[in-house]
Image: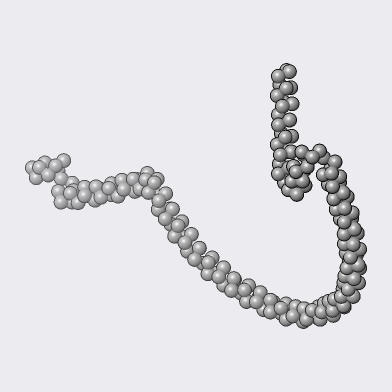
Length: 199
């Protein structure tokens, strides 16, 4: 049915064409709302986003509430701990002074004993040091005398052409040691070369 048939004299409906148009518009609006509701129900992402936003808002509110509760509890605990700390500190001061006094007395007693023992040890160490020093001096003089005699014997028993080099070696031992070390190296190198050649 169209408006045309209604104006041509056909049966239009209970209220006429105006009423029919109104019913059609109302039905369209209801269908539009129903379609929007169905689309909203089918929009899972949108619903999930809305739910997540709602949960975020709730979590934020809970966080603020928990923070304020924790801050208040922290303040209360801090105040109680401060009071307890002061009480312990006062007791510790008293005990500390008593321990310090005892330790001071004990320290002085130990120090006095240590001074006496230290003097005794110092005297004994000094005597032992003098004894060792005397023995070392005697041993050193004996070694020096023997070395001097051996040097004179070598110097006098050496043939006349070798006496100046022997005297030089006795006065300046460092070059002699260097030459001797070089000789040992040369001999060792010669022995190793012969062994390699023999193999």
